[in-house]
Amino acid sequence: MIPSDLRAMAEQERERQEGFRCRIMVCAGTPCLSAGADVVLETLRQGIAEGGLDAEIESVATGCMGPCSRGPLVKVRSRGKEIVYERVTSESARQILFSVVKGRRPPTVSPLPPDLPFLARQERVVLANSGSVNPERIEEYVAAGGYEALSHALHEMTPDDVCREVSLSGLRGRGGAGYPTGVKWSLARKAPGERKYVVANGDEGDPGAYMDRSIMESDPHRVLEGMALAGYAIGAEQGFIYVRGEYHLAGRRLEGAIRDAERKGLLGSRVLGSNFNFRIDIRTGAGAFVCGEETSLMASIMGKRGQPWHRPPYPAQKGLWGNPTLINNVETFAAVPAVVGRGAEWFAAIGTPKSRGTKVYALCGQVEIAGLIEVPMGTTLREVVYEIGGGIPSGKRFKAAQSGGPSGGCIPASYLDTPLDYESMERIGTIMGSGGLIIMDETSCMPDVASFFLDFCRDESCGKCAPCRVGTVEMHRLLRRITSGTATMDDLVKLEELCELVGTTSLCGLGMTAPNPVLSTLRYFRDEYVDHIRQRRCTAGVCTIAENPAPGAEGEALLHAMGVPGEVE
Image (cartoon, rainbow, N blue to C red; front, side, top):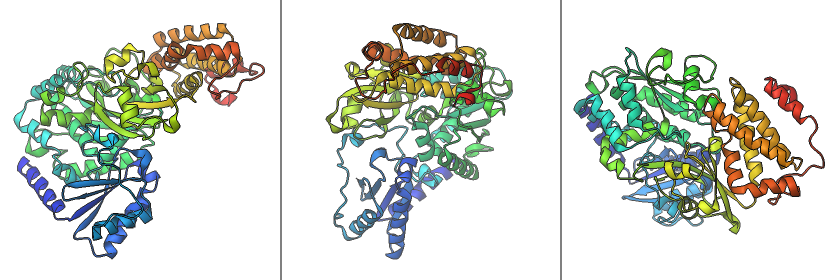
């Protein structure tokens, strides 16, 4: 395929779509499928076939449309207008189809208001195609402008130009650290080495986070195109996508997308008629949270146990099999086609001066509308919770938002007007992370929340370094004493000392950030810890206060530290 073929494919697909009087799209992301979207889709297809409507109405399975808690979602696009229906059942799907045919409103199913803030307040760049294209048809991605940025780069830009464009855009790594993407790409480009690699980190293990999964499910070609642009920029001919083992649908759609792209000459040898060769393979993880850390991820790709190693050297200098390796997370790569295609200046105009562009969040927890959103950097937490998310259900009060998963921290109500950008969140003691945003109301107990995240970190510690292996066990034990009302103020002092020790001496990011939920809840909700200890009271009514300390707690900690947790379960 050459660029003119790409343009012809796009035009042909657009003409095909315009040939339908109506397109009925069903969200086929994991949340909607789990709510019954497959049945809705089948009902629509049967109805279209039985009515002999195949030539004028097309049913399309798309990726995530956004408001996941309102699924299954159906979008009707006709004559340039779109209507989105929520909580669609098999019966209401038949009504929607009938309304399309007869031009009447469905009797019992109501559409979402077109000005619903959840939909209207977003600025979709990475999610531009999600919910609008069939992720299993490459033609639909191409018709939406897909692979045009790659074609432009291969034929009109040098690799240095691409690195420079990414640098000027201000794009920062969306995996959590926020490292400047252009700087990382330039380092990998300049690193000496006959072979170089590009790796997309799709191992997403944070509780409540599913941004990367949704991007891979909804728009897999966007990720592939971003990786190909990175390969061209740094001089790599091989890429790997590391997909979390539980993400079966994402893995399957990526596999199909890679095959289609290779068949069309958009991956493989002489991409788009150029001298650039680039292949992508999938590596499936086994569901270990630590494999989201880049050195552990590389060890896993190379067939070794997923454990971290000391840095430097950094992956851009010495990564896979000792060669320079560029690692970005899925969302970062998915932003690159827009950066190259629409220009650095356009992207840099979105967001704040130091945090440019948009960010995808998985909004979940105690909020009226939960789902996947994309907003400009700098949007405040209050706007996200109360305008886009619709506020807290049942008239309850907002208490906190956990950002960044177990590596992040809790944001209290007093910081609701904090802009969601890298600098502002760091100032209040939390991090952006990969984009998980869990909203909690007044019924949440913050020591219990901290205990939940420490329990997660304890289980996910790979055990390689003692501070993390032993420290997370001991921290969790102390938190359990606090939540059960059996702790002393000395225990609280020990907990704070351990937070400092584990954070500063652990080998990788898992251990370094494990204390964050404890530290942030202590900073903003210390009274709750003291109430549990001195008053033996959980004001939220969550914790069960015991009469006496739990027997054998020290022994449990010791056994965990010795690496035999199964002995005490």
